[in-house]
Length: 235
Image 1 (cartoon, rainbow, N blue to C red):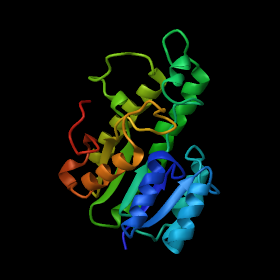
Image 2 (cartoon, one colour):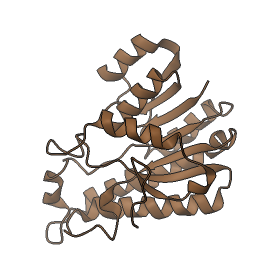
Image 3 (cartoon, one colour):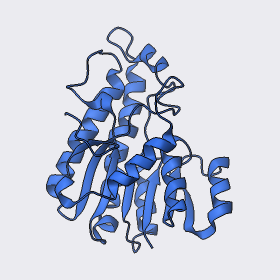
């Protein structure tokens, strides 16, 4: 039985990863700050014991370690570091507090805690479980806005910098961990709470493409920054 751990699993891309993997006969550990979410309750009723829901705030490092200890003997084929934040508002409203002249530094620190430090903590806490299988995959959910080359607009400094930081973190992990495949994933501009109503891509469509891409990854892909189709995104 293949097993995945997903953070931010109650909505958006995290929910779609959970739903689609369950439909493919995986077991899923769905981690979220809202474990009583109706979305997950419906999946639990449908899939029963193959879905394990756990309360987790990725900024609570003690809790992350506790969850890792709970599943210390469970090999993981996939860890999706999906929990992320643009602050209290999604795009494009988050630009109101993330520009050169209107930066809210407290919000920036909160975003950094979730998008970079939290992702780092989850990855390191569950490295042993990923390494327990052949070619375990770590997906750090990045964004096209974390690409320096594709930054043609400015603003979104708080979110952009955290995703660029996540990318360099992924590359470093790939260098140091020869026993897992670590990739930074740009899912496209998705219709989630973060992406906003004006986004182009339904989450279900993005995740379907991502899963097809993940199935094709080899150890040689470790350290890449890729889009949902497996194409290279420029750093």
